[in-house]
Length: 210
Ligand code: TMP
Image 1 (cartoon, rainbow, N blue to C red):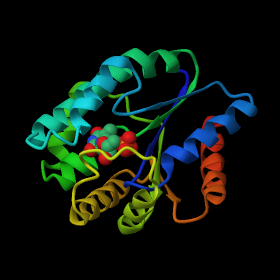
Image 2: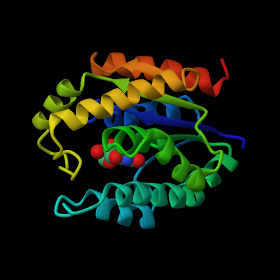
Image 3: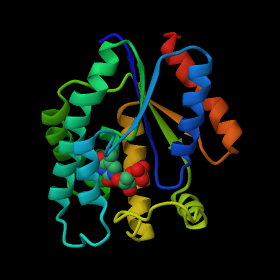
Image 4: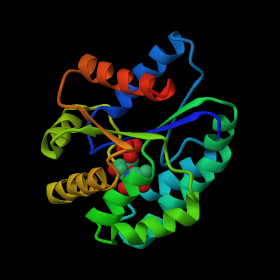
């Protein structure tokens, strides 16, 4: 694979989506060929699956169904969009990937990190990211931020209680310990400009193989 595959992770309200939109502009200005995409979604079939998973009225959805739907959306998005872009030598920045499933479904829903890992291996094979940025913010502070952001869509997982979001954060901490080489921690409690600077430094380092 010729391009670079970078994923961005974090609890709700960590600001990753806003920051990486700005980073995309910065990288384009610097002359890099960048593709910014997101999970679940990024292509028609996966956006439809996103709509099913995140619909707040789907209150009866079973946790394993949820994990399988995320994995299905991931597979289709990988095949249709991410792999062709990497073949094309692009820098692919993906807002969430497998670590979200490991933290949210594996750890916070209690399905087991290893169990969720195995269904995701079926979905993605060995296509792990070159680097993952974890936007580190205290989950309560993140939830406060999204409560203040009136324009944001409220999805089914946002409606979970604080203890669920605390567990998501703990799940990510376990993943950081498991994959210290791949996962870089970004202090997302700082100002947007400061977070952007940290992210741009890491990403240009990865692109240039520093
Ligand atoms: P977003 O708000 O960052 O677009 O993500 C949508 C929601 O889906 C968010 O609450 C995190 C959740 N999610 C999972 O639970 N598992 C996954 O595998 C992914 C990709 C997202």
